[in-house]
Length: 302
Image 1 (cartoon, rainbow, N blue to C red):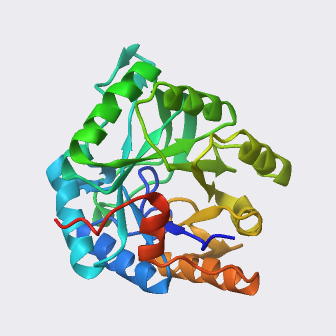
Image 2 (image 1 turned 45 degrees about the horizontal axis):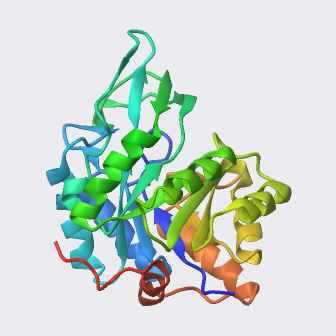
């Protein structure tokens, strides 16, 4: 099997320190957390930059993504830097309006950026935040309604080409694979195709059969990684490693290391993935190996 690419999604865009006080929100916290995960064995970092004036919310400014990218590169000279992009448009179901195209991070020139190749309607319970955390608020039910049509994806890919960004395709269900194949057939994106699929949470039902079926459906020239959410994390991560796929870990995906035991750091989650891979006889990819596998060049400087 190919060496295992371990992605670490250090922060996420929904829950924050109210869910786990060890989740990094400031750029300095994110850079240090990435450095620790990098030393533990992560070769790719997935970054959601938070707003400095309200760290409960994702940034909408490229210059803020650029700031955290610079801090990460200073500490981690080889790691692959991936910024969330999402793509598509959020729907305000109360007013029946849509947002502008989501592409805040592209002008920061990440080496890789994520596109949610899906349309989804999610409801997430988010806890209360104290004044000390920033972004003080009561607990509430967040509505996340996203539409991402093929025309917007093709338009977004032109921006990716402009800034030499490799897309990371994030898929929430098996039908998203069909959509990806259709995009590839348009000739607007070249391989190798870096694909992620969610298992658990708001993603695919977490079982072996679903993962095996997804692997059969993937387009040619695909490198496949799994995002393993919540209580399904350990079992599906181990299954993914056994089946020759790659894995994502991090505080975006899990806030508990074990029942009633909070994750202490992103590095702790990377260390567990490395330990499982070694027990199974699977080598862990270095950043240089991951770059070669994904068709990336030398580390981008900021």
